[in-house]
Length: 376
Image (cartoon, rainbow, N blue to C red):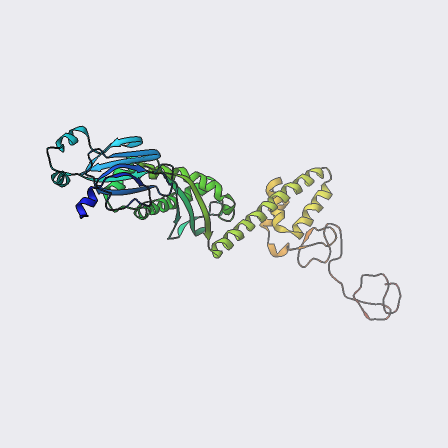
């Protein structure tokens, strides 16, 4: 049997799916092309020179097909049987022409099948570090992020006109080469804005990755829909990493902020205690003096709450070298060289003296000589 006779042998039905799709030739004398849904690809295509004037394309849901004959695109073919050749084309190629001449005049078809229910699983990542400032501490940081997403068809004609129909060799790999850099760029542009809008610092941000992804997903989806008729039903952030140095700097700043807050909190509690002692002026002064001696920074915080007393202003304007010590009994500020406290009379320095009876040196404050036992 000759080659031409093999090609002209009738083929009743040709089952077309993503496995058989991509063939450069369909059987020429085919009667029916049945598009099967194997849910294994977002789109696939087949080519051929169809000689049978009664050939049809049968499309079942959820597939959608576009037929291109000699560069002329058909409307969307959805859920039904559609003839490849119209009536006027059949008449032109009627019986008055011999079969061989009809074969020479046949039209080349390009059949592209789309599956709007298929979701392709792809990955994204940010290659260059994103540089920004931590929203809470304002410390400069840099971080990287990566994750994955699912992409589906939202508009078949837009996808066909913008990408797939432009080249007979266009594949899913070509599609990913187009859209993955766009997804990564959108994430790079938006992730900082989302984190700042949520008022998250970059130590706590890992606990809110799901929330961040939920806000970025519609932005990514809208961008792909506008350009290529695609949408993103699932968008996931797997990792969002900052350097150890940046993390340590943020933790140090947060620790200092917490300590500062605790001082203010303690100062308020102390101010409440002073208010309780307001009618006991001596106890109140003693409380403040003791606080000043134990923790001067906290003492200043308390003064900010209750107001600076006149005595504080006066003491701060005097020579600091004269009031940097305190009475161990009442806590009153005393001069460096003072021997007795001017408020309570406490002896602050040891007075060297001689016993009038035995003549030995005495450094104690007692009334009797420690050497001879006689009264001083």
